[in-house]
Structure formats: C-alpha cells, structure tokens
Length: 206
Image (cartoon, rainbow, N blue to C red; front, side, top):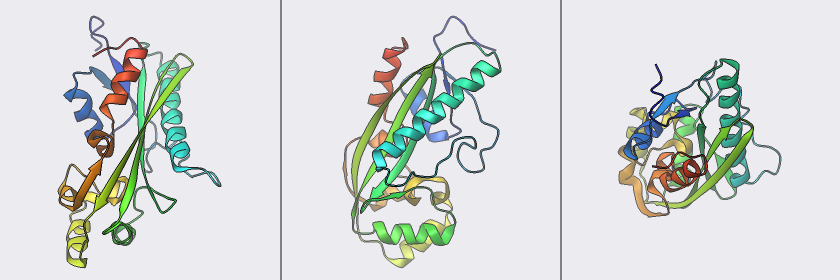
C-alpha cells in the first residue's frame, strides 16, 4: 500500500546495506526486484566490455539497473516515482574485481588486496520516465597485510560471497582496512552524498 502523502522512491536492489543507508538519511522507499537475482540483477549483463574502464563499467551497470527498474514500474503500472539503483566494483592494478565466484576465488582476491591499495567505485543512478542521471563515488582503500589464517577465517564466515572485492567494510573486514580515503558509505555500497544530490534533482529532497 503506497502512502501518497509521503514522497517516495523505488529501490532496485535487494542489498540490505543499501536499504539501511537509505533509512539512515530518511528516504522513504519501496523495493522492486527483477525476475532472476541469481547473479546480481538477472536482466542486466554484468560482463565488462572489451577495454572498458572500471568507472565507465560501474556507471553503465548502475544506469542499466535503474532503467530496468523503471521498465518494471511501467510494465506493472505501478505508482510513478523515481527508481534508484547502484553498482559497486573494485579496481586494482587496472583490473575490475566484482563479486567472488566461490570461496577459492574469494581467497585469491583477498590475497591480491593484502597489503595493497585499491579503488572502490560505486555509481548511483536514478531513472524516471525516460530520464536517467548517474553520479560516481571514487574511494581509496588500503588493506594491512593479511595472513592465510585471517583470510581463511574470513572466507569461512561466508561474508565475502556477495560483495565486490570479496569483503564488506561494514562487517568483519573493517579490521583489514588500514586507510580509507573517500566515502565510507560509497565503499559500503551506496554513497550518501551522491544519492542525496540525485534525489534533489528528481524532486526528492531529504
């Protein structure tokens, strides 16, 4: 049941972290889901294009998810309101690092990031009636040196499996982070400053 007296948006994501962040800044939202969430968002192809820069890649996915969300709103004849979507990826040594395929992949990713600095790129996009706008959050994270026991225990916890770069800064992996430059909420998965800017553009001020 929609509360038409309160400005709302749709969130095209199942991420509990993004839901918590929207609630943190007082955004009223309804969730919409795609048909197949087995690999992220189903209808959105997450395969990087040949030679695609990480920033362009993550913005393309965020825009595609917002556009797909709007198509669902239109197809289901839901109450028109802006659709917000986001996508996060890691850039390290020029490579795009997404979610791990399995536990072995998660361990390999964490070994690569151990003692190194990487970028966390999160793009947020809003779509409404054919209009789509997006903004990018670009943060720098440096891990301390991780030993094999730390990596094994963390992967065994299951926490890395649905997260870009095989870690969640808001969880146990917060203990791995020696330095963070940029947006903490962007590293979590939804940069709040950029989100607020976009929502204002779509007449949803906080």
